[in-house]
Image (cartoon, rainbow over all chains, first blue to last red):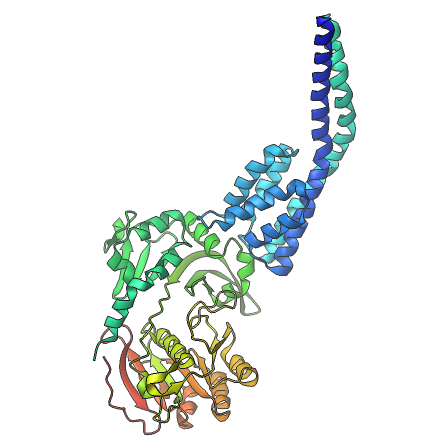
Length: 172
Length: 338
């Protein structure tokens, strides 16, 4: 009886681990897409409105997908405190809070960090170029993420459950 | 008579917050150094000069000095704090609110107006397009000009600028740079728009064309300086065009502008004279004779429309009124104020 209970717990937890890993794979493409859209909004704010960066970030955070709103909202808040930090630093602080909660990969993060270096420090054309570059790179990552998602989501879903079963068989 | 200099001293205590407004836009390390300065120095700071690879400097009422990293002033260059590239980058970001792209127009003019009406002059590598300044890249130097309101500087000259019937004379303020010309102009505008009961002068509508954003110190179109209840401000507008716009649309009784000098400015002024609107303006220069040699201004003197010339100088401190001259007789009114 006790053995059966233990077996059930092992299978259950392994399945859960599998599902979690799978969900990270399936969430990532969506988040990257949301990021691209948000960057598009930012680009519009900068190129057409010439809105100051803190206001532009705040307005993007209100209009973009809720999954990425935290990043923009936090960066805007940091900049509005006027405690002497640069746009890059504010962006890095926001990113360090947002990244652990997101499904993004390290490559995605480095693309965003790279973008932070150029935020707000040049004229309009240059800003648009940097935003376009970041979007292009994210698009590339998105295709990769989608492929990985199709491949891995199912694999990890099953792997968790089956791995749990195998473990039980070995232990019994 | 009491020197204007003393009036300035009295109001400095109130205006120290002006310096704080500027300090809040500096990086933490510079902010710390400058806020540690002794109060007498802080009270007289007119300019903060930040140049990459050069010592941090202050422009005071009586000359300039270096600032050490401990927040003291010194005359020794070697003891001074050296501004590095990081400082310059931070200053750039902070004064632009991290939005250099939103300031292309301002960079083209070479300065940014901050909240509170303070101006920051900017130097660096200038990019041109078809011979016109397009932008400034590789920004390397700043000059923060602390703008202080000095309420009351106009009181001494006002009696000479208003006729016994309570009408304002066409007035030109003449002064070399940094002698309190804009400060006096601003206070005159405020008094004229408020009204001067002791001279039997009712407040009138004053249109202000503020090409260099110095008179009203507009931030996003809103005047940061007190210009009284009846002032309309066209911020960053070219003078000649602005005077016409105000004349046509805002029904001013007086039009005030800063630093007339070009041919088109004088032509626009003539329109204003003809429309029966009073003029209050300033000219860079130190004497009437010197100005008469400048072709654009020669005409202005010929038409004899200006009724009062106020000459400013520094002989007894910033804002000394050297002389007031009747534009009709070209004779001194016999006033040597302060």
